[in-house]
Image (cartoon, rainbow, N blue to C red; front, side, top):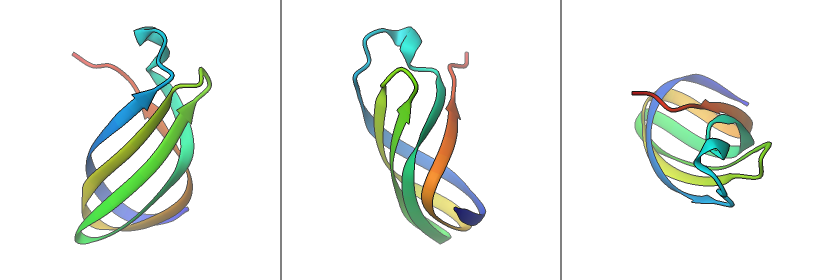
Length: 77
């Protein structure tokens, strides 16, 4: 759960990616972070195809988050 609003800039590593088409989708997992103006975040996310993403990043805004999260990841042009 969490509260507040923030923007996130993150980098990460991707595991179990067999095909690029397996990457987009809904990822669920655990993340934690705390932001007052600027902060840090870490997350481990997995989608239904078994793709795992480990993220580490910086945040801006006012928010706290710890626990289960759901992220929708897609490709854009």
